[in-house]
Length: 173
Image (tube, rainbow, N blue to C red; front, side):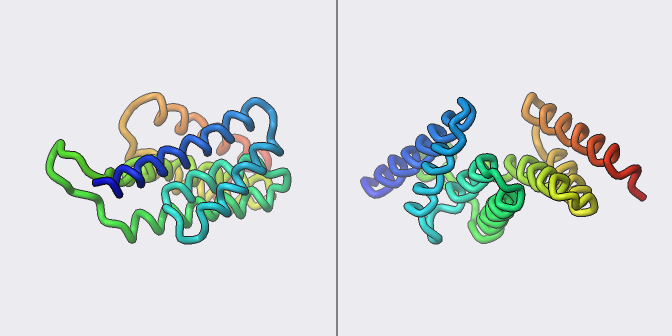
């Protein structure tokens, strides 16, 4: 139980630090956000928690100046999410009982945004076919979300990017 508490405190600390870096980025300090996320990435390491690595890579992509670097980070985020979802069983403790909670549902809810970001990366790199493929994956995964604001915002963002891509390249076949 003490070990679980330590893990929960560490998990909360990592997510808190990711959140602080996100706030820096949103406040306009892209470089400091990138530096903090990079330090945290190295601290977590390659064997770190996949949920943390996914979230961190997802936000690290947003801080990149080079679109190819953003694509690399978004691909890492998707790889971490896919690895976590396929390799980890869902925790099935006693109903309502204490115990570790795997963020599987949170990661599954992340997939539409991951695919949308990849589509935007590909569009920015003038790779419309790859962008469309990721948009199809984003649309498919957004359907699995519960109705609500998050789903609505993602659906609208998917539609906006589709229009942008089609406007730049003409209708797809």
